[in-house]
Length: 115
Length: 119
Image 1 (spheres, rainbow over the protein chains, first blue to last red):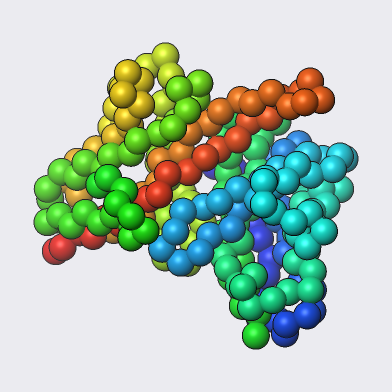
Image 2: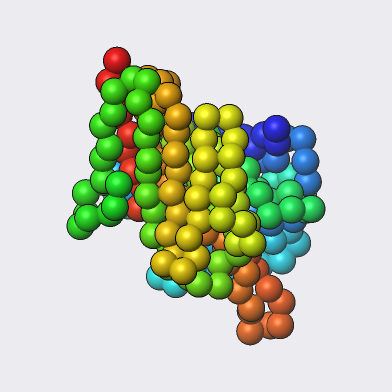
């Protein structure tokens, strides 16, 4: 099956710093990638939809200047959490949609802890 | 397995029993539905999907039932095993229309159900 990777798997950063999370589709091309966040014992909440070569579409309530998304190639999207605060601590999950179909393939997630 | 308040619904079964996990979806225009399994600290794993023109689909040990009249989805797991213990999410896929004239597909996840299988 299609594989999506994320890096890093875990990151701890200090309050006020920025952290970048990478999402890669390893064996397929994805014109569309999605970024979700998940709090403990909660469901996945879509943050933004990222289309290759264009600006991301953010969900209501998600600050686009705080969560910078770049989708520069068909296999890589990045999420940068800027000026991180402890309340940004969460599990961030990306997914990628194959150019041909509806199915989304999910990455393993990145655990962000802001101290 | 219906969602109640802010707590994750739970379902506890004995190994070998059949499990049924329920989900109510919200958008009558959704055309594609997926069940995911998520183990602790990992990303969601695809289990089975169903399109809106079907009401039942079977996989290996799993069956998904779709009732569009009441916007209800269920996942049946036969002969549940300890390795099935995880949180299960339903997701609905909806094709929305953007103001720009384009379209976007979005997956919306349900609240999830924690399945615990007792040996």
